[in-house]
Length: 358
Image (tube, rainbow, N blue to C red; front, top):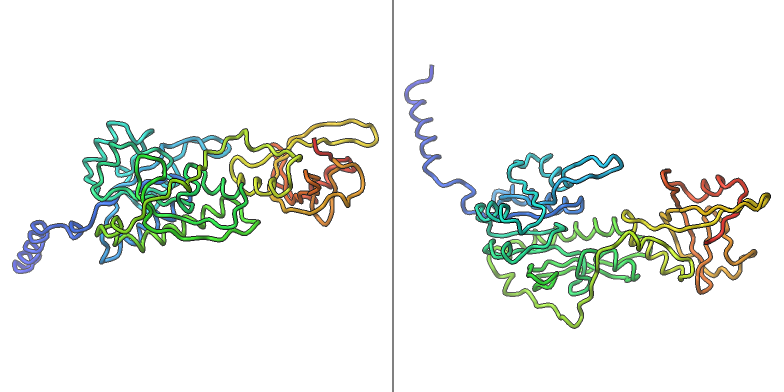
């Protein structure tokens, strides 16, 4: 049995704890908005920073896209950010999944949280004015471009498609106009000619999470808003959403243009080409759809023998003749419903048949 003195000490401790303000009462209430896997690195950085003894904020809630059909089986699954948060033990009742951020029921619940700051990273939904007015410190977005360049849904893909050698990541306040708010800070990142969109997205959001953690104290104390610079509208460019119809390659185009498109559209929607397979013995010809996975710019195809539209095989690569006397070196391909294979495996599977661009 517990002694009376120990019971009194315990009661006093409990009473004191109950009457004292929570340890996190001084911390700012932050809400994170993100959806795809690349957003998880940002969420992880926020989880880690919020757990520090001297943290200035706590994560009050997470807002993400609703569950959707993914993978081959189209099984309905939570967004990668929602799943990551639950795996980390974040309360599921504090993960909101509105179809649109302007839904009245969601806005009512969101306002009841009394959020002071929102952080967005590839959330994927437009934030209406009603939403933006709720957090007292505003909403800060991690955008994977050097704003005002490449505003919109596909900044990384469009930058790669255009073959730029440098991009970056920006922290900017969110306003009603798309990606047009004042920029707090940015960081430049060089691009090599082989990096693909998924890899570059991951790199930029990782860099963006580091920028965010570094700048959070100034965002919270208000000094970031004072130093943030308005964007130069005359330099603004757009990065519209990619459509599946854009995935087709035309070998009339220059090889550099095609290579950049392959890098830009890697992951989704990918890049496809129609090619002709010809049996030289029977003369039979079939058109197949080929997904182009990995490429390099090869060089001048005028030195090749044979017809101009012949696809050659050299040093482990398929060499596709392209516009302007250039050629595209294709290292990996995929047939519909099949696995990705290297060029040598695909070429061997032709069993002596010829390949031509369509």
